[in-house]
Length: 226
Image (cartoon, one colour):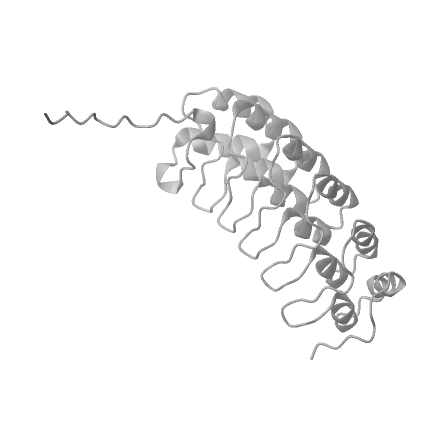
């Protein structure tokens, strides 16, 4: 006897972990939520989030979500409201950056700390292969560097060009950040994909203060890029 095949039931998805929707699904509530987030109006944000089906991780036509906007603006109250409501913290924008990247990029250490408390992944890389630590290094924010390293961020992570946070900090002439990264275990002689070290690039870009930090911490002046 042939058994009657059971109809497969669709999986139920909790609203907090619903798939990220995109611009085609954008509606008036999403628009109102975005405008409230941009203004930093936490009461309005909380009110709209209370409506059924509102997803703060949904991307607009510019590839941003409300979650990304409040992280990039450093609005801790709005960010907290969204996290309490529930959102996929791994949601990325069209550049592959998550909320942790954006908080780090714009030097918002308090928002970054809150995201880390919710276990936002430090190892996530954007489309350039950069982690939040790369962004923090360029932003010249020591507090962000310390927080990320304390939560296990790889200090020697390389982007698509093979550049570490130390290399980027050197190119941006951030001597304080360079020293902090070295203190956290950054390899001063790490090479990028063109075989260049932070010292070579620092000299090329005329970043004297950063170069002095590298040499003081054992950068090999005899290395060649050939």
